[in-house]
Length: 119
Length: 265
Image (tube, rainbow over all chains, first blue to last red; front, top):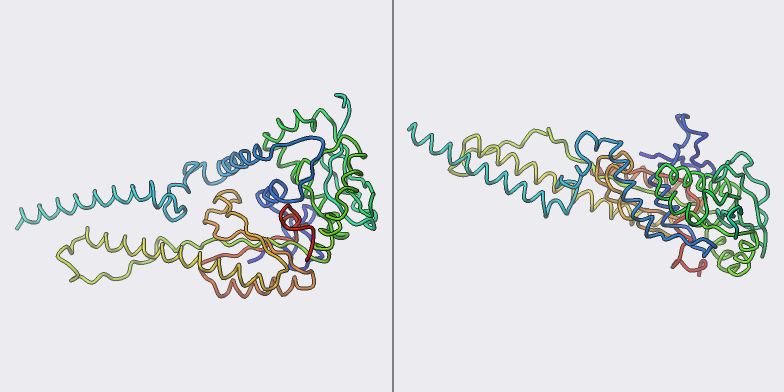
């Protein structure tokens, strides 16, 4: 599945958006990744602290996420899904599983106790 | 530097035989790009006002996501227009000089670096390759559970079995996706001059809900771009736990930065 054109002479540009066979405009995340973190660094006459921009990209993620599906399911939905996040699998995800496990155990106990009473 | 003065925004550096390019491209701040030539190099620059691009304003504006998005796209659009004409060494966003003299000085001081980087990216393009893990369908029927595995055979036990099977399938799919990502990264490297790994983007950043397991950039000779794309199609067919996305061609942002050396050795 490709997004870009397969011929290097064509380049993704806004002008070609809408054409079915043409390349799509580059997405903002891909552009920011490159123009903020890559490219040659020259000491110009204005100093910009790129660490500030790093903070900013974190904010950007949240904003884009909030405009997207996250608004429906909570902004940090991917952080709590153990399948989506290794951290979550070791942290809150595991806690959730432990809790679920505990509830299931007590449910099984209750069912077993009832079947003993019935029998 | 007075408050009324403007600044010179530097997009990138090209060979001095670049020629006229893309008059239609609106540069950063709507100011049309122009060229400054020195040391057999052409700097592509634009004039921007102090009110929006001075040190204090810049710091403030970079915090404004709409402004940042607009500026990043404008910077990128100019570099793309230049890359259509020939090799270009992209500058990081917000490289600003007080005047053309500063640009000329930089071209002269770092001429060797620029010439080296230009020869590295000449007739080559950067391609982005992303892989997203394909999440196994939640609704997949659970494997049949043998009823004699243990004393607990009620609905609770069946649920536990089913849940365990789901989790195992998820974990396996994740492992498969990560393994595929490693294979894809290595195999595509055979078609490239050089490659770089980016950290995976957060789910949601690009409107993708599936976790990203590979975010790579390749510097590929233009004559091999077709082979490269064919290899991606082939890998797509062979790895069902990842979905591959090709982006590009990009100006060679990822291959001109610090630590890459001045050029091919």
